[in-house]
Image 1 (spheres, each protein chain N blue to C red):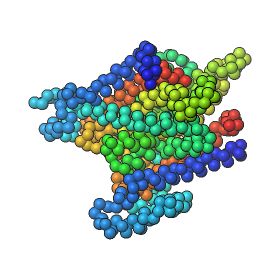
Image 2: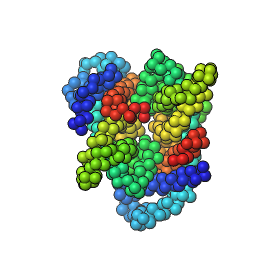
Image 3: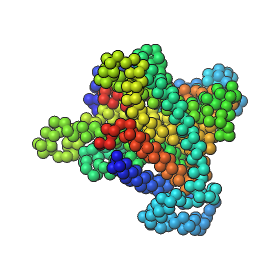
Image 4: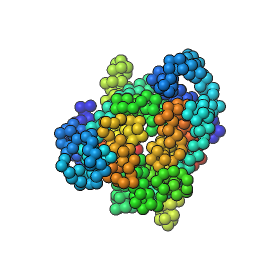
Length: 305
Length: 285
């Protein structure tokens, strides 16, 4: 076990190093990043002094070295529009994005797992067919459009929920429903097929022939095994939720990390964009690490690999 | 590629598959002939007919799906939006597919530490949520159809690379590939003549399914103001217009979204059918 954890941590550090390269070069895709950062009214001299202040006149390798040594301590430089460290802004917004993703994930799991299991147990019934139709619809629908539709029905027409913001507990209902149902569409299919797989196994026949009650067989023997691949997929799904939050937070003006990225892009606040992208992928990598470790606890076969 | 087309031709379409084919065909035709069949000019302002609801008529004719904040016909704009969706998704998918298949082919075929490094790089790219990556890059590089295609193409290849690499690892062990090696054929020849055809059908299926993902990504970016710019007409931009008047003109947000959903559903239906015919192993993924 200890060896597995160590090797997973090693992989994580390599991935983070590569991500840091990506984040570093991302803002240099158009050459000198100063062209993006400098306000349009700046003259040649002012641009030049800004370039020197940011160290963009130095060789690339030196720039990266400075970037990475600061980044590991969480220092991505100052935000140009807020005049505070970029990381402080990111950390300030992080909580709301995690809250939104967490609530969405709970909604997604609560919808997907029961529906997936019921579909598998009643294969080809009307329930199965309608769940799979809904799942197709849910994956084809852009989640931000679903968000707009929810606003029209529940905020504009019925007035049950605020149109945007994060001031009250009720404000999270619509954005979380929007992301959660999208996730449920993806997860319910997987739960169904993995449950079907589990129902076919030999131990199911053994359990039934022992005379155990069908419900007990289904829940204890089938569901527990069926959930293993679902847990693995959860890591990827949470990544999808983090990505989806960028657009959905903009729809609902939810002041999380995703919205910070969009705001910063519009005011060309590059350090904040870098710090935010870095955090997004750090969160994603950490989630997958935790899921993998959990997975190896649930299913001891994994460690062998 | 010929073999793939003839396999597809040989199979009868399922019910869902044929719905997909019909939707995709209609969208592609509209993308080509859109301007000739649309009832109104999609970018012509008509300030007397702003925010008119469904079925509104004036001297210029009927606006069956209503008008937007500048009096432009929603229905004509949805037709016009087909063009951008088709162009962006096809080009982006072709670019991503070519990069990804070559990348996976090389990684899988060469193997060893080169494979390890290449796949680590791919994993790192995957560890940044796709939309976050695309949003950040387009924020730096700028907006517009051309850059959007490049961005979606150069970021969307990782899935192809992973799938292709997996297939190559299997194909490498096939008897006739081993035989070709024994006979002394060159590595390049083995790679292109014996292995590539084996991995193509998975790549084609994946490409079909990725078209849907790309359409949604394009509309998300355009919605955020980071993708296609006005006066080009796209469904994502229409949704952004609709959001601004969400309290009063529900039709502005409803119909472009339905258009996206229907088209993506069509693509997915068609892709699912292709997968069942070409590559049953991929089922359930």
